[in-house]
Image 1 (spheres, rainbow, N blue to C red):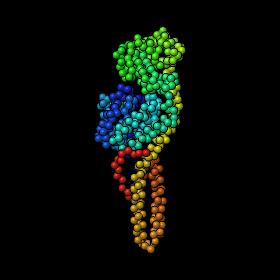
Image 2 (cartoon, one colour; image 1 turned 180 degrees about the vertical axis):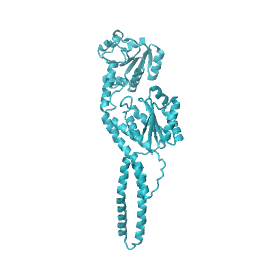
Image 3 (tube, rainbow, N blue to C red; image 1 turned 180 degrees about the horizontal axis):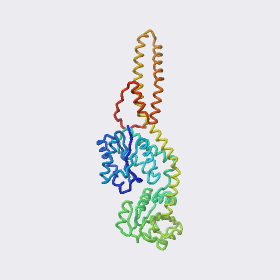
Image 4 (cartoon, rainbow, N blue to C red; image 1 turned 135 degrees about the horizontal axis):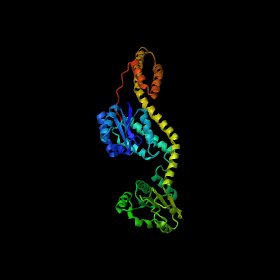
Length: 426
């Protein structure tokens, strides 16, 4: 029995290292099969853009060595400067905090819980009951943190802040129209989030129509040239700007007439560019709500502040769930010894009772039952202390030494390791 973890994440390794040790979900079962076949260890692989971690149980010292060697070969350089290794309780605590979003690049982000679930599901044939129970418990901890705290409440990135502000203006975004002016990863992600919230029509304007077409294809929209963009300010509900222009390109003369034709309908402009794409004067137009990068980052900072204040509450939940898991995990070492001890004692009790009853043939059935009850009661009282001591030792991680002492004292043999029975359900 044993738990170990070898991995790297956004804190220990730069992106150029992380991306070379990333495995898509479809490739994970094959990687795990190789680890299991080479080392006999059971394994789960969690691989995302921000972390790659192998969770191991049984025979893990050899697995740690094999994984480190293979990863170093894949990198073309030693893994050691970027990797961390955790063992036993540290492994469980780390995974619980990962599933809760407490170890993420963006504090409290919710995507990681789905990634933890995918990793577990991809390891159904390579994980043993301990790893199954570990991941089930981690997912429960993460679910509780999200349900019982505000750790995941509010936008925690500029793109998600853009969506949050659009919701404040329009409420439901279903059926809304949007325009993205320029390019840039944040603008593209923001528009993708808006589409996922129900924005129906997307136009992408760029100086190079081919570039606009590539972005529009991803978003399910239509590409237009810059010249066609300005009249669209009369039609769209949301405009996201992210060009590389050295000065404002969305000026009052360019969009003022289009805004005047809106009939008082609100327009939300999200200026993600640095330097700013939109002249601040545009924000003074009636029913135009203009937010620049500072506004968006202000929303993020406020929400991150709320999330940080929720960390103690989240930590309490993680520690509660960790104790539940660890009580189960640590107690596994005592179970076999307790069962052996009770079986041994029951065998002695039954043999001596049978011998005694042969000499007490005059007893009627009721008296025989009383004698039977007496012997069981005495046996249970004698075993009560050792059983409690074993369970207490298991909770402290000291059960192996005490179990071995009991086996020697009572002449018990080491119990064979039972075959895996698949997932251990809670």
